[in-house]
Length: 218
Image (tube, rainbow, N blue to C red; front, side, top):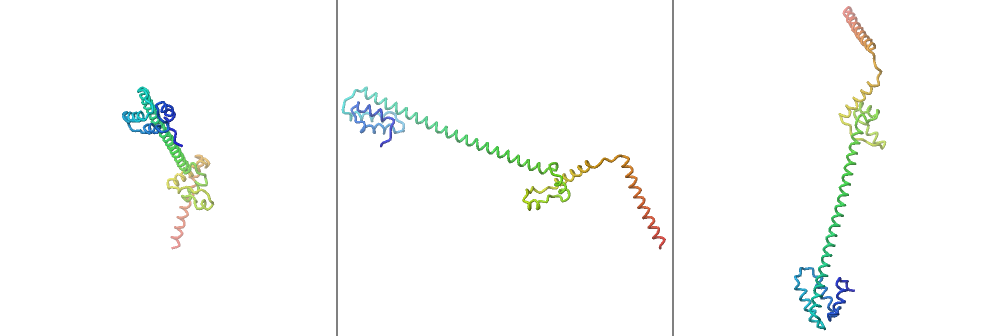
């Protein structure tokens, strides 16, 4: 079964009127119509002359002129519609491509934000003020975390602590100790200073007596 052509219905009606068998001569007309090359009218004129010479009746010139105009107009309308469909198809492809590209951009931006957020979270976890007291004590004592124990326990192992982190942790622990220590009054401070001086003088006197004793023994 041959493929339907946009001129089939028209040709099946008009060709018999012009004294031509539609089944025999319709392919001549559709063949011309399928030629998408630029046509200045000569090809159509030659086709009309061929059909007219093959006609079994002598039709009026107006009938053949109308036939020529109808074929030309229908062909132009069809080609214009095809061009429009092609343009719309291109626009649809461009729109789909743009939509996919936009989705990829949004996904990339979302991933970048999430990565930056994770980095910031890791940085915040490493700050001394966010560490537990046990962790601060461990850092102050050893300068690093007991990562091997954490690994053996299947726990999460953080990145190595830098010297700056160690110093910050030490300073924070000292500040916490000073903050938690009881406040000493001025009188208590003077008494403590006096006691320290007395102890120092007593030790000094004891050393002097030992030295004199050694001198007498000589």
